[in-house]
Image (cartoon, rainbow, N blue to C red; front, side, top):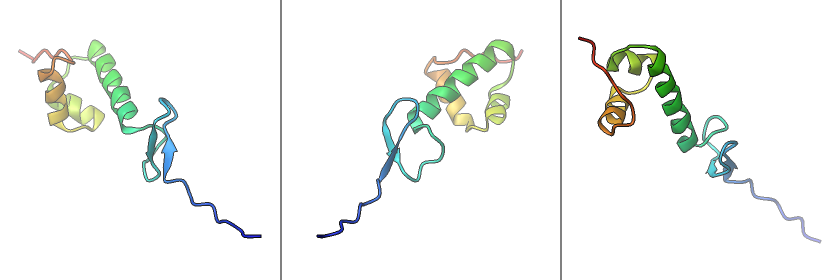
Length: 82
Protein backbone atom coordinates (compact mmCIF):
# COMPACT_ATOMS: atom_id res chain seq x y z
CA UNK A 1 0.00 0.00 0.00
CA UNK A 2 1.32 3.42 -0.97
CA UNK A 3 1.11 6.43 1.26
CA UNK A 4 0.23 9.45 -0.81
CA UNK A 5 1.36 12.74 0.55
CA UNK A 6 -1.37 15.33 0.30
CA UNK A 7 -0.19 18.51 -1.39
CA UNK A 8 -0.97 21.71 0.52
CA UNK A 9 -3.64 23.96 -0.93
CA UNK A 10 -2.22 26.79 -3.00
CA UNK A 11 -5.07 29.10 -2.07
CA UNK A 12 -7.50 30.13 0.63
CA UNK A 13 -11.12 31.17 0.34
CA UNK A 14 -12.36 34.73 0.94
CA UNK A 15 -14.66 34.70 3.94
CA UNK A 16 -16.97 37.26 2.31
CA UNK A 17 -17.42 36.22 -1.33
CA UNK A 18 -15.93 32.73 -1.46
CA UNK A 19 -13.38 33.53 -4.17
CA UNK A 20 -10.03 31.76 -4.06
CA UNK A 21 -7.14 33.95 -2.95
CA UNK A 22 -3.41 33.31 -2.59
CA UNK A 23 -2.30 31.53 0.55
CA UNK A 24 0.14 34.42 1.09
CA UNK A 25 -2.71 36.97 1.29
CA UNK A 26 -3.15 38.65 4.64
CA UNK A 27 -6.50 38.61 6.39
CA UNK A 28 -9.67 36.72 5.53
CA UNK A 29 -10.84 38.92 2.64
CA UNK A 30 -9.76 38.96 -1.00
CA UNK A 31 -8.44 42.21 -2.45
CA UNK A 32 -11.78 42.97 -4.17
CA UNK A 33 -13.71 42.65 -0.91
CA UNK A 34 -11.08 44.70 0.97
CA UNK A 35 -11.34 47.45 -1.66
CA UNK A 36 -15.15 47.42 -1.53
CA UNK A 37 -15.12 47.60 2.27
CA UNK A 38 -12.62 50.48 2.24
CA UNK A 39 -14.73 52.34 -0.33
CA UNK A 40 -17.86 51.97 1.84
CA UNK A 41 -15.95 53.22 4.90
CA UNK A 42 -14.66 56.23 2.96
CA UNK A 43 -18.17 57.07 1.67
CA UNK A 44 -19.59 56.81 5.19
CA UNK A 45 -16.79 58.96 6.61
CA UNK A 46 -17.43 61.67 4.02
CA UNK A 47 -21.08 61.87 5.08
CA UNK A 48 -20.02 63.09 8.51
CA UNK A 49 -16.71 64.90 7.93
CA UNK A 50 -15.61 67.76 5.75
CA UNK A 51 -12.02 66.94 4.81
CA UNK A 52 -9.54 67.60 2.04
CA UNK A 53 -8.32 64.91 -0.35
CA UNK A 54 -5.04 64.73 1.54
CA UNK A 55 -6.72 64.47 4.95
CA UNK A 56 -8.92 61.67 3.64
CA UNK A 57 -5.93 59.78 2.23
CA UNK A 58 -4.01 60.19 5.48
CA UNK A 59 -6.97 59.19 7.67
CA UNK A 60 -7.45 55.91 5.78
CA UNK A 61 -3.74 55.43 5.02
CA UNK A 62 -4.37 55.14 1.28
CA UNK A 63 -2.58 56.76 -1.65
CA UNK A 64 -3.79 60.24 -2.56
CA UNK A 65 -4.06 59.01 -6.14
CA UNK A 66 -6.70 56.47 -5.04
CA UNK A 67 -8.82 59.26 -3.55
CA UNK A 68 -8.40 61.37 -6.69
CA UNK A 69 -9.33 58.40 -8.86
CA UNK A 70 -12.59 57.87 -6.93
CA UNK A 71 -13.36 61.59 -7.30
CA UNK A 72 -12.63 61.70 -11.03
CA UNK A 73 -14.66 58.52 -11.58
CA UNK A 74 -17.57 60.14 -9.76
CA UNK A 75 -17.61 57.44 -7.09
CA UNK A 76 -17.27 59.92 -4.23
CA UNK A 77 -18.44 63.50 -3.97
CA UNK A 78 -15.81 65.90 -2.85
CA UNK A 79 -16.31 69.50 -1.91
CA UNK A 80 -13.02 71.39 -1.77
CA UNK A 81 -12.76 73.83 1.11
CA UNK A 82 -13.27 77.47 0.14
